[in-house]
Image 1 (cartoon, rainbow, N blue to C red):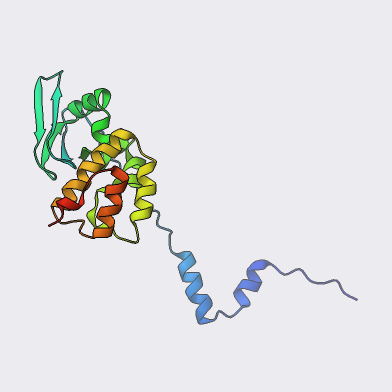
Image 2 (image 1 turned 60 degrees about the vertical axis):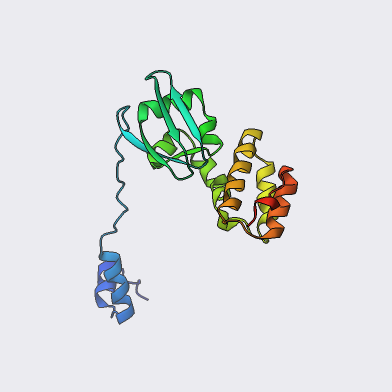
Length: 189
């Protein structure tokens, strides 16, 4: 009996017939794999102007370092502040951002201040469309896990959303009123 003959791998590949499906697979494998390109974000400097939006009405900030006063009169007002001023505000009064009174409109600032998870977790509470019969119990549960300062600011935001007609369901308004111990029903049109 003879010994089995050793066949080079190249000979086997060369002699096999490729089906159309295998050809397609091979073409896909031969194509270079494109990796997502990471876009480097510019580093923030103290002089960079950052837009800050008011999530509550009548918010005022006085910067001791520059002796300037910034005022947001209505929800949605936007004022540009230098990043240096925002850093001072964060250093001295974190509650402006943590209690959703103000929000930077630049993701780099949100990331730099470490607010990404906070805005992801509680940001929906400032959206009047979320206040439905189906969601009101989970919203109350979420609110219970927040600080007193945040709850106070949110109560004011809810009052404004009721006045503006963004929250109109009587059951939702009554449930929120019971939780906050505020008579929101008289605010309905």
